[in-house]
Image (tube, rainbow, N blue to C red; front, side):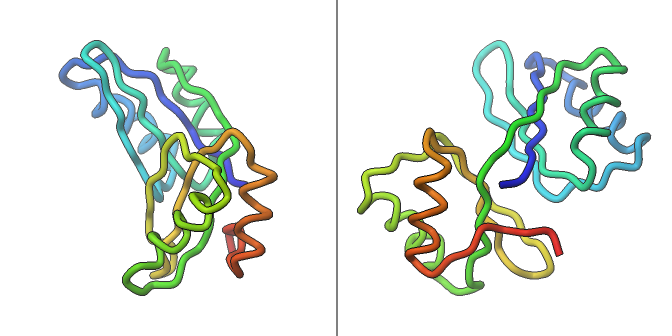
Length: 135
């Protein structure tokens, strides 16, 4: 499990720039960023080096942000590794709410959210995969 920063943003020009400027001023290193939007607002999901400090900096700037634990797994840097990982969950009937990837030290890391993190970890381990660790 790693911590993900979720930032709630109105869909209007300049909001993403404001969020990133706050994180830049706080010297937060971003590793991954994903944005899902609707007509009126978006959720920006961020993996960074100091999520609690990032959240505080955003909140101090009047930007709504929350921290949550998400699952992350390091994959082999080969074609089909993501498909193989997702297939493990499909075979066990575990659904994913969302997922995205980033590279860390030249290795792909898949971040995902499910309603049963303990089962996800068990499935990953039985499939020979390990949860991602910062090292």
